[in-house]
Image (cartoon, rainbow, N blue to C red; front, side, top):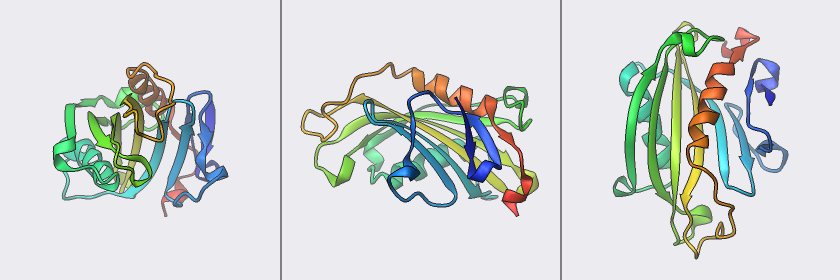
Length: 181
């Protein structure tokens, strides 16, 4: 389903059934967040200052770890399973490479003691011309702790996260580059 992001400056496909989180809680101006309550899956599109100290080949892993840190995920509770780069022709709307990292994180919701295992798919599109890293992340629960507030979450196919991520970066279009100035 085509979604308008950042006031219409960007658009991309977001899976059917995902709700714009800003309709019920505050979301930072540099993020667009969509979630599916029944499955605890989440999609975040984020605009960040391009960090020149992080190489292109390591940028997705860097943001995977940044997400883990913001999730209060310990170093021992995170694993990057794969890291790779898709060619620019896979991102037709931006013609830039897609740097991707996929891994698991053990995280607790709402500062609970019970940790759930989530698969995190991170894609970093480096927009050099506007010194911006456009970061897309998709999270999919892998294992829900029975003591978690998410214990009634409906199980989903974890591989759907990969499909969601690909559909998002393949459909991304910037309609107004003034967003970045």
